[in-house]
Image (cartoon, rainbow, N blue to C red; front, side, top):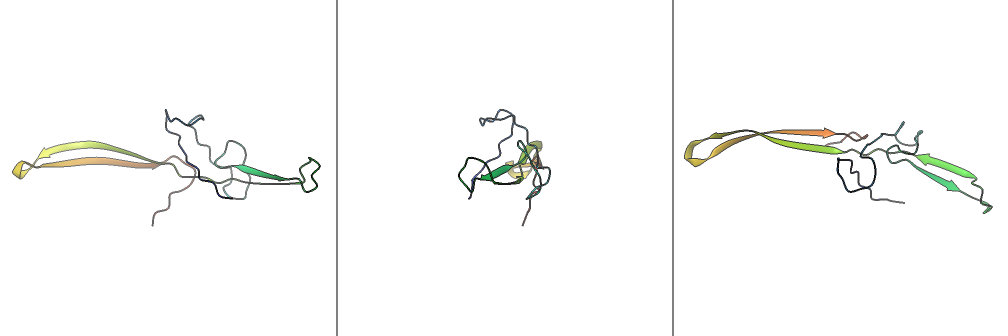
Length: 101
C-alpha cells in the first residue's frame, strides 16, 4: 500500500492536530506507538472469528523543512541600483534527516 501524507505542524495550520511532531521511538520496523511519526499497525484475522491472530507495526519519520528569509540591508549602488543582503535560515523540525543530493 502507498499513502500520500503531508506534515503540517506550523502554528495556525488548517489541519487537525496539536501542531507537535513526536518522532518514532525507533524509526523503521522497530518499536513505535500511537502519536509518534507515521506509526501504523496492521492486524490480521486468519480464521474470520473476530479475534486478531497476527499483528505487526512500523513507524517512520518525515522531515519538516522550515524557511525564514529576513532582509539584512539595502545599500545604494551605482547606476540607480541597490545591493540587497538577506539572511536565510533553513531548519528541520521533523524526525527524519533531510538528504541532499
